[in-house]
Image 1 (cartoon, rainbow, N blue to C red):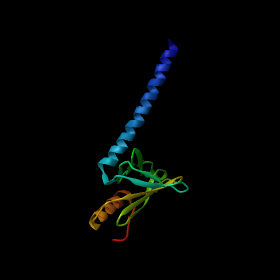
Image 2: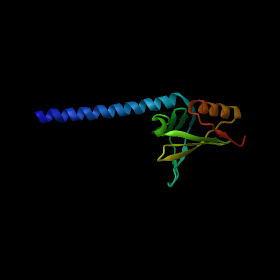
Image 3: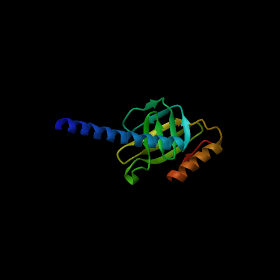
Image 4: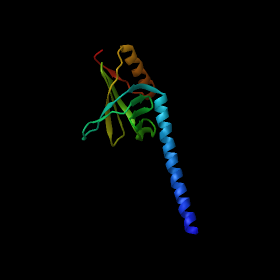
Length: 140
C-alpha cells in the first residue's frame, strides 16, 4: 500500500512539473504571437558548422523572440547569459536575424514581403526600441 502511495505521488509530481513547463511555453508563445512585428509562411535556418534547414511552418518575429513552426526562441529571458538577438539585416526581399547565446548562434532568413520602406523602418525601430539592436537596412 505504501509503495502505491509513493508511486502515485511521484507520478503526480512529474505531471505537475510537465504541466508547469508547458504552461511556460504557452505563455512565451502567446507573448511572441501577441506582439508580432512580422509573420511569414517559412524560414531558412542556419547554424555554424551545420546544414541549412528550411522550416515551412509559420514564422512569427516579435520584439520578445521568434516562433519558427513549433519552436520558441525567446531572447532576453535569461539576462546576459541567455539567448540574445545580436544582429538584424533587412534588404528589399529578406530579413536576416542572428541570435543565440555564448555557445550556439543561429541565423534565420525570412522573405518579409514588406513593400514600402516606411514599413521596414517601423519594424527596425520597434526592434531597436525593444531589444537595443539596430537593424542594418540596405538596398532601399
